[in-house]
Amino acid sequence: MPTTAPSPTGSAVGGAPLADVTSSDSSLRRFLHGLPGVDAVGLEARAASLGTRSIKTTAKAYAIDLAISMIDLTTLEGADTAGKVRSLAAKALHPDPTDRTVPTTAALCVYPDMVATAVASLAGSDVKVASVATAFPAGRAALAVKLADVRDAVAAGADEIDMVIDRGAFLAGHYLKVYEEIVAVKAECGTARLKVIFETGELSTYDNIRRASWLGMVAGADFIKTSTGKVAVNATPANTLLMLEAVRDFRAQTGVQVGVKPAGGIRTSKDAIKFLVLVNETAGEDWLDNHWFRFGASSLLNDLLMQRQKLATGRYSGPDYVTVD
Image 1: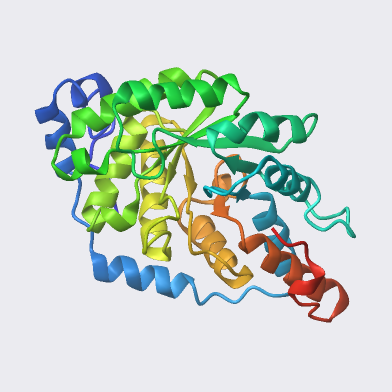
Image 2: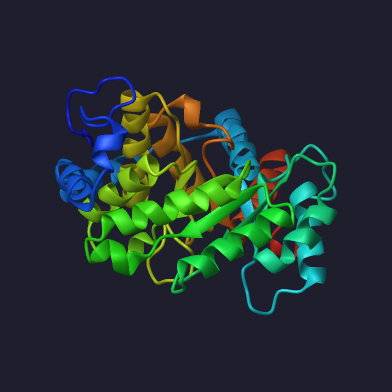
């Protein structure tokens, strides 16, 4: 299922240099609307088919540990406290305190005002500190406010920034406004990696998700991310498959690799393994690494730990045997 226009040339997209594609609102609209339409039936059928793959024994044990290592352990609630962040940081470092062979999670994701606490709690480890920004989750703020949000998080030590796009501007067809906002946020990130959140549940169509994916990548996203986890429809196998196709084809055309982060609604080991199969079969093994694929989740980690314990002991220990988030 191709997702790009033909005739790539070097760093060009769809046969046109990036500078030409983004030179005006009309040229960007022409490029995005020139992408092939999504076959929704075919997309959903392929996602469902890949989800039936059976993963057992040593392959399942490997997949569980890989999924743990890809989690952005997340707390994004108004009631967050420094104590809760420190507790989650301890869990990110040692997901199962009784078994030090369990890998660390990829990152701990918090609001900007909790970044300093997270950084101090994770000092000396490989666990990254990610922070949502740009008036998360709605993104309804002036650009100056959004950029200040990013600067605060980066100044506090965030390794990664998860920004939300202006869905209203995108749905109104103001693609250049969205593009320029992503570029401006990327400039404020410095060395921090940028994850661009589309809120796919609000984009209405698969065609819009494809366009948003390409828009985010052309603007310089290091990751494209499905959702905030704050709306009714978040990550699904189908929308994640579509985004994996986009990053695969973007690298084929530009040589630039971009990560993918499904977030929200992925709660069980079975779900996580289905997503890993999607990654392997669509983008390929190069994305089977936490530098290029993440799960935005909180409750998922406990189920992965319980399934890991079951594989090791033959017994299902239940939720009382994992730490409460």
